Image 1 (cartoon, rainbow, N blue to C red):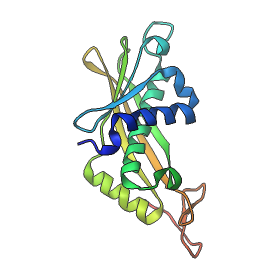
Image 2 (cartoon, helix red, strand yellow):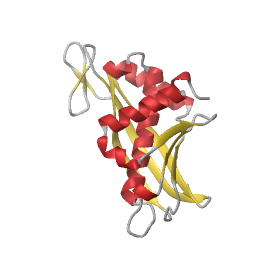
Image 3 (cartoon, helix red, strand yellow):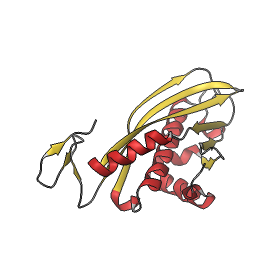
Length: 182
């Protein structure tokens, strides 16, 4: 079930944030929507994302899947952390994409929401270590069949006085000792 943070206004604001902070996404001409099952959908027209063969360019498919997963992670973090904009940064850590067939139509990426257990573990890790990660799955269908499968591991890093995260992904506690979350 979608949370109140996934209202049309919130999604419009999220689209604006993505275009502003990730200007390379502007050419995608994408829009975001959610459904009653909490899935996030990014839609984009084929034309500005087409390659020389008239099918969707693999780079556009990859970028749109990555951004859709990032938007889902942003929503999860927003639901988990009250002051998300000041406290937590979201980024992709790793991804894998499989192209199964060409996409010859407008693009629709669907990102499944993480299950409740994964969100609970995420929340516990973020509260305890100041960082947490989730694996999210996106898919793109074409002509009623799976065309692209994307798996992304996204990381949330808490920033501010209570957490100091270094580039190695370690979190320093108050005494300066480092712990690595698994």
